[in-house]
Length: 151
Image (cartoon, rainbow, N blue to C red; front, side, top):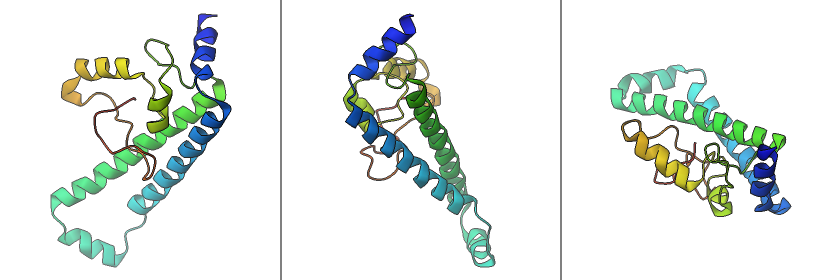
């Protein structure tokens, strides 16, 4: 099958150590986002409730957007781990070519190679592409919401 050949070519770029490091990074991101969501979605105490009433609407909107972003990253991380498990990790979802190792090391949940991601962003600039993937946990090498996306 062409699909198996593409997948095996894409994973050939990544050593076993690379895949282990990427898997660990994805697990750390998953834990970080789950904890973030627990804090953001947790029960509102009376003190927190008082502070929320004093905050401007824009601050509440930021809180809601952070939670939505954390949920999307959590889904992206889960999808990347599933691709690792099924052997399709590292292959671009559009062109099926291997995603560059350096890109995966920075954005381990990337679904698209850099070229296809640029095309996706050019096609849908009004929506900011699909889902930016550098919404990574701190210390992962990704810088929230910039130029390298890979949903």
